[in-house]
Amino acid sequence: MISNEKTFLDNETWRYFWHPVCTVKELEESDTGRGQLLRVKLLSTDIVVARLENGVVALNNRCPHRSAQLHLGWNKGNCIQCPYHGWMWGEGGKCMGIPAAPDGPIPPNAKATAYDCQEKYGLVWVRLDGSADTEIPGHIVYDDPTFKCVHGPSYDWKTHSARRVENYTDLAHFPFVHPETLGRDGHVTFLTPDIAFRKEGRMRFRYDPPKDARQAMDARGGMSPLAFTDYTINLPFGVTLDLTLQNGNRTVMWMWATPLDNIHCRSFWFACRNSDHDGPDQPHMDMQAVILEEDVDIVESQDPEQIPHPRDEIAVGPDKVSLTYRRLLYELCKAKADGPEAIKTWLNNERDNI
Ligand code: FES
Ligand code: CO
Image (cartoon, rainbow, N blue to C red; front, side, top):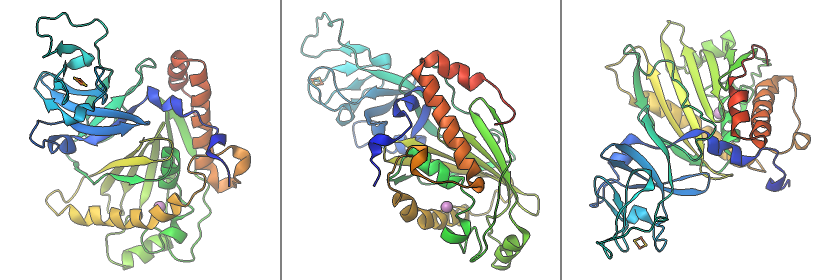
């Protein structure tokens, strides 16, 4: 067994990026009688998310007074009130009041730790460190009214976010892990995808499934998710699959593997389709559920959970996607060692061929 200590990625790097921490729906459903307050986790950091008057906020879940957990408190509209002695924490972690000392003064160091927080794509996103000035990646069709986007249920896997992304973009496992859904039993495809470019932290490649695999799938009755696919990885942990079906209809799958800690991730996802808007969403969701069920045990069996040093795993040509992805993550971690400015520079350094 290889120790997780030997990973070659610096997990502190992901602090500079935005990650979804919950769906807007989950936040809305979090009211247990004290207003909307939701406890979430990102990179081992315990966070409370709330919608206050001016939008969503994310505070460290620990009250600076006597360290009680804020998610047990109240959403008061303009602040989160601690459940223990009622101190009130507003936007930016500002202390808005101390019930036991109503006449003040508020100690100058009475400040809760606040993180950057915003809503986008029906998700609440948090960035632990804003100093690299990163952005939430754009989505190719979310604002296009010809597409209908539907969120699926998020799910937790015991693996590093990068392993999850690799699994999501791995073509060679289809015939083995997904013989009935994405691959064809006994049909091994040797693919060396062309990786097109890196720009703003994106790498992109295309997959044209072999015709016979596609036909076998179609013969099974229509719901075939096998299609020409344009893959984009948004560094560090996002993936967009733009699938074009034989009849020209498109489905765009989007997934982000949020690092809960170094060996657990939560995947958020939604699917957008430009046809059959009035049809049921459930069959699309069910197909995904089947595919995920096929993947989870194998991915969680990977030991170590984190991506180890290159010498500790073996690769061949068709592993090009994963090799390139690892190299880009590694370059990003190397840039991080030079500071947040270097991350920014690295992300903006456009290259056509990688
Ligand atoms: Fe939060 Fe005292 S611990 S107000
Ligand atoms: Co899979």
